[in-house]
Image (cartoon, helix red, strand yellow):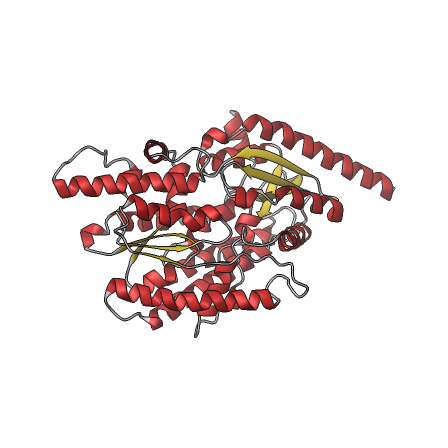
Length: 450
């Protein structure tokens, strides 16, 4: 039996998440054919403001999502090369660099189409199929690059494509009354962003030339709230349940659906299927990792070039990566905040809850809380080379988990969309070392009990 087959036999992936792949493919194909249908296209980055676009009858392309898709399919190189030739350095956020390369390709394709030139860009390259935008919306929290990303893209298109920026303040959390979802800072920031979302609606009306459909937005948020509730219910079923019925990699597979796919009954049905399959697994004790020995937390944005590699690597060591900051503390993660009759404030609050938009005290609270709730043995920190916003607090989080909970940590180098930064040998050696430390800790605990 090959190593790949041996590792595959250790895992049981959720069938419901595999079934959701078609929804993602259909979404992107819809974007690629938007111009043929005469649809307006908006490019946006950061927060999930897509329910506004859907309510306005627009097509929307999310910058990080498209960069991640290219990287996951090993098709990111043409866009990254175009960005590099245009002048963007390798140390720039690889999401931004990849998407800016797409902007260059899209602009070139647009100009060639207008001049009648055909064939200079291979239209089979996925990066070149993204239609040029009619306007931009930026709503980025917790990252200085993200807040400038669309401004830079705006320049690529000669400052001729309209742009609207939603400013999302950082939640420092250092006031005496501050805490997760509470305190004057939280209330003031919620008010500030809510006011901007009403301005966003006015901007969209000016771009479409028609009144905004508020009823459609309420319906969209009704679907999203229910989908989020189902997702959170399913996640909660994995708390301290051994063996875990689902892994971090299963939750990675659901991000596209909750983050940018159209709000619809199909979205609710998808997460109903996820929830129901996990409930069945809990009842029948069907494990995600058949020989689970260790339960780990993953901190860091996903390395999209290496999703399969990482999933296999941890399974090879009988590790169940159960949860993480990127999956469990993002993407409509607090559905109780959403008032479907008047959704603006709850939407504003979720945009503030980007996992890179919190001060360290809040991040310590969230990380340690999840480690306790999910019965975590250790933390894996993906030190993302070009995402400093996510990586910068990781040493402090590791120190807190060790001091408060006695949980060990390990770090490995990689990136979100540029595989050249990945250091697989470091992951292997450091993972083995951490698992050995967990074994020692367990042995000492057993000796103490005896």
